[in-house]
Length: 431
Image (tube, rainbow, N blue to C red; front, side, top):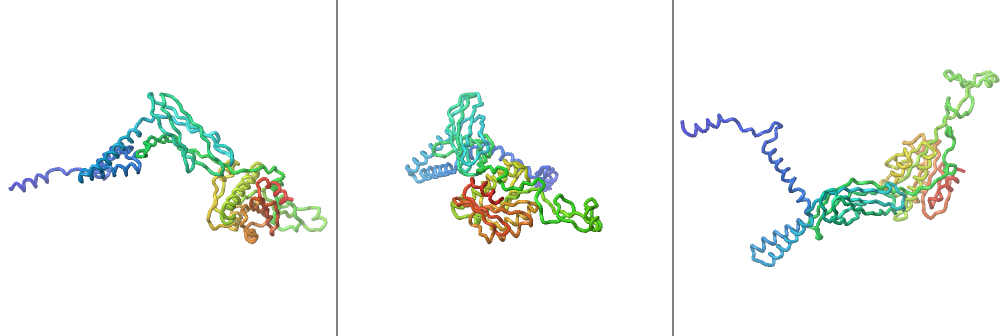
């Protein structure tokens, strides 16, 4: 037997190498994955600390040193080592322990447009050693505020007060607070997040409508509809008895006088339910800044009507072409209105009326809110989609205009120029 045959038989008797783990993945891949996690756990924070500009400087440094050594250009070597020195110095700015306890406090989480929103950041050194100076950054919406954090002794605390502009209705995300270490050139930037983001609601301005001036239905038993019913509280007429009618509603005196059984006929009543439909379609408002002013006025009108309805403990539905707001409390309603924005969708006030009629067919009063760009023809088309028996009041927001009232078929059209004119306008519509 040759040596080759002996080696082949020896290999055949050797047990196979266990290349696969119990889960079916290659053992080599498992080992490589574990090694990668270990390496990334150490190198990852360092790699992520270097900014994009820092990586560009590092690449330029290597290229300059290599080119200078190969080509013998001292100028390139000087540039390369100068950039290398800048990178080494940047590392010194980025290193350092960060053992902080950070608190972000807002004086109020909900303010009205124009009110002052104030917050506080408190940073405490929780370690047993002093900490080097750092910078604290606080994102506020699309911008951020920066605060200098001085050197802190053990258990020392440093706090800063800040103000948030609230000149416009919005939902502003404040935070998370982050500590930043880095060099002045921006080669390295080390960030650590310390808090969760907090929402600041900037509510629209509202006005009290004062119960009797609100124009809402004040009948505790509801409002009469044109639908006849055999069982309700609003008497309509008498008719002859039909087999199957409830005998409790037989009018015996009339039956005795006419010699025929006569029963009471009623009109259905419905519980007072207010529907407020706010158009968010940009085409329902004027163009440019005038349209934005009209939309803000319409949002304020919506909030005022909704809060008044909730104060009077009435059923309420507030909606736009695409969404419905939470109306369990006035706070939730105003929170939702804080973030509503105009859209470029094609659904005009006509589609809004159709959505309202479908979503709230049992409403007793429906308000349609829009800007100055809506025409009387559009309103007449919109009225077709409102169920019969629902009182419709349309309010056109046009800053600077005088209060006016027009009747367009079954729709009462109010035009207001300021939020303060809303109670007067509603009294006119309710007279």
